[in-house]
Amino acid sequence: MKILLIYPLDRDFMPPSMPPLGLAYVASALMDNGHEITVIDLNGDREHGLSDLQYLLQSKSYDMIGISSIITQYKRVKELGKLIKSIVPDTPLIMGGSGPTSIPEFYLKNCSADIVCIGEGEATVNELAFLIQNKIPLESCKGIIFKNGSGQYFTTAPREHISDINKIKFPAWELFNSINTYMGNYLFRSGRKTGVSILSTRGCPGQCNYCMCNFGRRLRARYPENIFSEINILVKKYNMEHIHFVDDTFITTPQRVKDICHMFKDSFKNVTWSANVRADLVTADILKNIAEANCISLAYGIESGSRTVLEYIRKGITPEQAGNAIKWTREAEILLTTYFMLGMPCETPDTVRETINFCKDNLVGGEFFFVTPFPKTELYQYALDNRIITNEDIYLEHAGEVRNFVVNLTKMSNEELFDLKEAAETEIRQHLKKHNIIVKSSIRENPRETVKNLPKF
Ligand code: B12
Ligand code: SF4
Picture 1 (cartoon, rainbow, N blue to C red):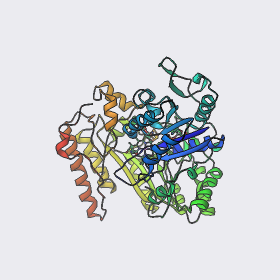
Picture 2: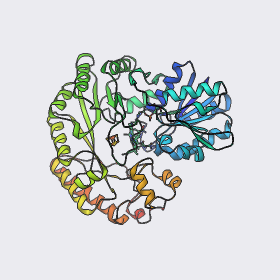
Picture 3: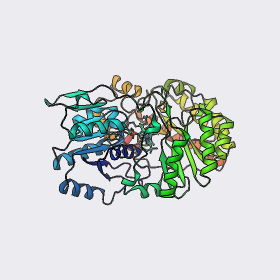
Picture 4: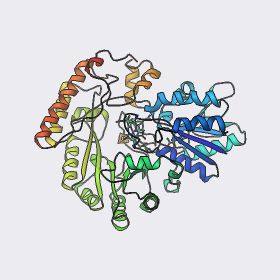
């Protein structure tokens, strides 16, 4: 089959810096089954992507079109779906990724999708291609929702998670003209020339109330040998200098981490790496070990310095664990990134004070994200139940960037929360400056005046 896969524009205020790993996995799975794949990456190729897409839709014919997206691309996917259907109304349009997985009906109703793939895509997309090619009804395909002949939505049985993720084909970056752009701009490359994402685990047993856990709660980890083969290709083919593990839970067992460290020490002496890690899973020993294995940077989602807030969100870490992780990471001489957010329903001036004190004591922070609830999470349900969000469609069109204040879940007024966040950032930054730590300001879309009248969703 001839299949066109598309990645929509994302975060257009900054250069494309994270390649669409999900789409690359799906492309690879389809290619492995003999399909002819064309990729149009509207994010990676901002100059020609849209005109290339229009040209292809008008001049070539495809048996199936797929779009991948996360929830923050919702508005773009809407526009893209409309465009595609205006040119090729009869070509089956399939949508997948964490956005469509979290609210599949919205993508059918508002984004022109004919079929939505829920969860992992590799097996589902191949089965769909087979059924569409052979004009077989879709009811038997697990893990999808689609509009049936009478225009009603039909949800099939859930697709089981892929149990052995070592068997999954590596991402097909060779199909992406944009790959060199991403590698050169890579968000986490920490000063190295080239960088790329790798996913070494799927699933997370965590219970955080703001997270949709799109790969399920069961943790599945790849063997170091399998990771080795992927890095080896990246180094040989693309001269890769830096690898970032985008795993939800990179540290699974201390033994697996040790094995990965051996791999870097023995085989990739010139490749540096970084990862997202949980503060409760690191120890001084693990950190020392990974520093010796070329790990140059680690990111921790600490979220809050307040025990009340940490318990409320069920993060599963304490301020003490977070403090230790910060201390040990510094001692291991690994670059440290910490993420914090303000505005959980239980946030008060007192909890913000606790977070400020935590940041000052541990010399971290200085920038907060506004809590923004996303679908298929407990926090989102809270916003719906409390009628803070009443029009999901309009809300989702706006909830694109968490540095932007779009919704207030707290008991404080909008101005109070906004001012509290600004004052907290200023106080922490001034303190950090005394210790020669300068926090870079990032883009903020809504200035104070606009906060008073946040749109009603
Ligand atoms: C790396 C990452 C980032 C990166 C890059 C994001 C990006 N635009 O690609 C950065 C750091 C910038 C980021 C930022 C944010 N992120 Co983020 N991020 C991730 C993370 C950790 C990994 C993404 C990834 O590469 N996954 C691996 C690939 C293989 O998975 P996948 O894309 O889902 O693909 C599979 C299936 O979905 C499916 N599939 C995918 N596409 C298609 C297409 C078709 C046609 C089909 C059939 C199937 C299919 O098959 C694939 C293979 O099985 C995920 C968590 C996670 N576990 O995925 C969160 C995640 C995507 N992020 C999330 C969020 C909320 C954010 C932020 C809003 C939060 C914040 N604090 O700022 C911002 C948004 C910024 C933005 N506009 O991009 C949520 C999204 C929720 C949702 N409903 O979409 C996730 C899922 C975390 C979570 N569990 O809640 N993020
Ligand atoms: S936020 Fe991170 S630790 Fe918490 S459930 Fe989601 S992936 Fe797991």
